[in-house]
Image 1 (spheres, rainbow, N blue to C red):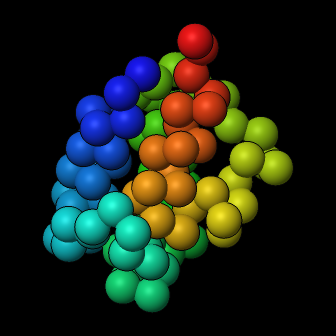
Image 2 (spheres, helix red, strand yellow):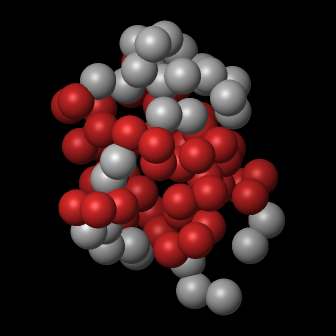
Length: 80
């Protein structure tokens, strides 16, 4: 799947939640776009939009620090 629609969906969701539209490589925690409650909301949103099921090991700082990292994680979880 093309990463652009995934990235756009994630950016739009984060903008709606935080009021800030992050660039693909912005650190979401340093910029204040995400916090612990925001992570929970984001995971629930991703599960709903793409019918995914996250395991605890999927939810790591490395996978959630940027829009690009989240996009890569979602792409890896989607069926081919």
